[in-house]
Every structure is written in structure tokens, then in C-alpha cells.
Image (cartoon, rainbow over all chains, first blue to last red; front, top):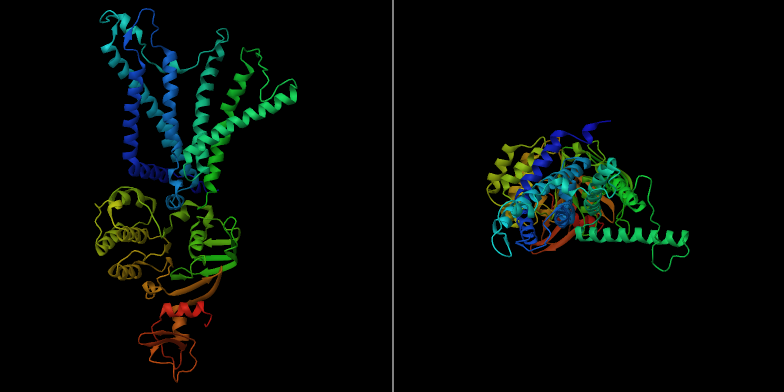
Length: 281
Length: 270
């Protein structure tokens, strides 16, 4: 088998170079726009005043901000394969001298890998700059705040804050599973936006979003059908409440969610690749 | 070389465009692919480029199956489509971005063609007129030195001097290893460059002949009237009289009126 038919480093490098030469302005604008929007979001969300009994800005608040910002990353990942949005651009894209695998991989590298790294850096930078900006103007209800009280009020952001901590402190060896599970859940959603987009031509991101909602509803309908099948007492559109805890302390619903998160990319990425391979004008 | 055997193709929910279609063309030729609107010319170009997959039959181009989109095949085929879009970048950036993907790209040739077409590398592609952008695309296509060049209506949008420049550049830059397929309605624009005529109608080849063979068989003339002329295969009235096609006699050869020939073929008189 001639591996050059599937992957060549020099061709892959040329594809990356080609994409950057053609789109560097768009990428720079996205980075700058993302940075400014992120800063505005954080600056407005961080508390500028200290009231007696008020709760500080901690990991929970950062988690909420992070999830909000993830929509931006989702939009960037979902804007992959923009060349497939029109027949003219698609023709150029499909005839570019590179293998389908290389064309799929370079989009993945730029959108999912580099995009995520830059997103994390921008998020980190925004949290720190916004924190400094807010703290420099922060006042309590009586006057200017000073000292450690002020600096502890808005915690300094670090990435470990994003890992969902286990609800079961006794099962410490499973904390990593929680963290990886939540990361993979986000990754799965990203790969859904990345791969399913290839199926659509116009308004791809919107259609992909709609199909994601449809997929979630489909799962719920299947669950509802199973509920009626195995729990005849289920009424109407309800899903039978069959939560139970496993011996490792996890809920069965958590295991179900994580299983989808672990398995989905294994299907979504090949699905996208083969759809691109079979794509016709 | 293009070798198509028993090709069948239809678009979704449409009647068959090609049914048991076969075509063989050797390298070193400039083929004029002619046909009426909807005859399937552009579809055939898309099939041989690998943009669409045949429903049945085999297509082999230079030893490759086009729809497999082998990168080595794609590096040796360049298609100039009828409609095109460019990113908002300069000509030089476009060349810098795309030329490394074509291993045989000739920058000197590109520079020469730019001079001929009066194109400036610093110009922004999206600020050029349609004709200028088409000239750029033609220049780029010829500079790739791909073994197969496919042009879909290449002279659409070109002004009169540019059409003659296109013919001149095409003839001077194509080598014997290359195969050029030109699909067009503007037959007069390419009548001096093509050496093979292929006419398709309703998904079948109704005419395939080399220019030399046509010149040996048919004589094209302009006569005041048809009176006294025997064996007229086809005629069309014009302001100066009648344009006619008659069988060649006594070895006399004439320049080929491709438009007249095309009309004669379509009207089934040849």
C-alpha cells in the first residue's frame, strides 16, 4: 500500500501553509474579537463592589464563564469546512492536490487543536486581565478595599478549577475519570459540530446545531420508549426515574453520559472523514 | 490519456445524462468538447476531474480513477471552471499559497503569461474584473504544467484581444505530454487551437474527429448562391451568400469553420 496516497508531511505542511496564507486575517480578527468579547464578559461578570456577606468570585463562577465561552469555541470549530458551503469553493477544495485524510486532518488541527489551545490561552489571559482591571477599581460599600481581603475576593483563575470535582470524596482514584469525562463531553460536542457540518452545504453551523438538538431529543424519545417498555407505570412523555448508584459511587446516569462522551468521537470523526471522501459537487 | 468505458450517470431525481458512454482521447491533444446546453459537457468535465462519481462504468485518466482523488492525480489535473471565487488576497499571495501544491509549477512561465495578459502580482484578486480574474486563472492553470488541463468556457468574459492572447499562449505552452479539454459554446474562440472535436448530445458522442481528418474529408466555403453546387452537406445563409460544407475533392483543403461544422453535426447532416 502506498502510504503517500494517504499522508505526506510535505503536502500536509503545504496545506497548513496554504490555509494560513489565505485566512490569517480572518484568524487574527477572530483571536482579537474573541479576546475583547471574553474580556467584556468577564469584566462585567466579576463583582466591582464588596458587600457585607457577599460571596467571592470562585471556581463555580469561572466554570459558568468557561461554559459560556465554550460556545465561541464551538462556533469556531463548527465553522470548519467553510469551503463546502458553495459549489464553486467546494470544487476548488476537492481538487486541491492532497488526500482526503490530509484535508480532514488540517481542518481538525487548525480548528480543534490550535483553536482550543488559543481559546484556552485567551480565556486564561482574559480572566487575569479582567481580574486585575476589576480589582484595581474594586470598592467595598464603605470605601476603598485594600490588602489580602481584596485579592482573595476574586480568586486567581487556574485550569484545575475547571475539572469537575467528584461528589464522592472517598473515591479519590475516580476524580481523574470525572475530569476526563467532562473534557471528553465537550470534545464530543465539538466533534459533532466539526464532523456533521460536512453533511450540510448552506447554513452548515445552524443546521448542525439543529441536528444536535434533534439528536438529544432522539435520545430522550428512545429513553421514553424504553421507560414505557420496562416500566409500564410511566405516564405520557416522562422518562422513568431509574437512578441508582454503582459500587464505585457513581450514578448510572453519569456513567451513561460519560459513555456517550467517550464513544461518540470514535464514530463522529470517521463519519466526517468518510462523508468528505464521498463528497460530490 | 482519458479512457471512459460504458459510463452511466444521472443527477438525483433526474433522467440519465450519460448511458453507456465511452470516450478515448490520447495525451498531446487539445480537445474541443462541444454540445448544446444541457448536453452534459460540464458534467463530463466534473466526472473526469473527480468531482462527481459515475453511477456505472469506468473512467481512467492517466492511470488513475478520478473519483478516488489520489493526491498524485490531483497534482496533475487542473480545472478552470466557468464560475470561480477567490479569497480577498493578492495574486502573489495566491500563487505563494497554491503553487507549492503543484510539483511541476513553472514560475517563469507564469511571469511570462502575466506579462502577456498585463496582470500585476500585487493586484488584489477580488478587485480585478471578471475577465482579468479569468486570465489569472488561465495563467495559473497553464503554469501548473499538469498533465491534464480542463477548461470550462475559458473565453467567457474575455475581451477580443484577450481571446487571441489565450489562443496564442495555450498553443505555445502546451506540451505533448499534456491533454487539454476545452468545453465551450464559443466555438469560434477556439477553432484555431483545438486538434480534436468531440460533440456530445443526449449523453452520447455524436461526432469525434481529428482536425486533420476533418480537413481531409470536408471542404468549407462561402459561395454567393447554392446554384450549380452539388453534394452540399450543409449550408447556412449569411450576408455574403451561403456558408457551405461539401465533401473534399481533388485533395483541396480549407480552413475549418467550426461553428458551421457544429451546426451541421447537430442537424445530423454530417
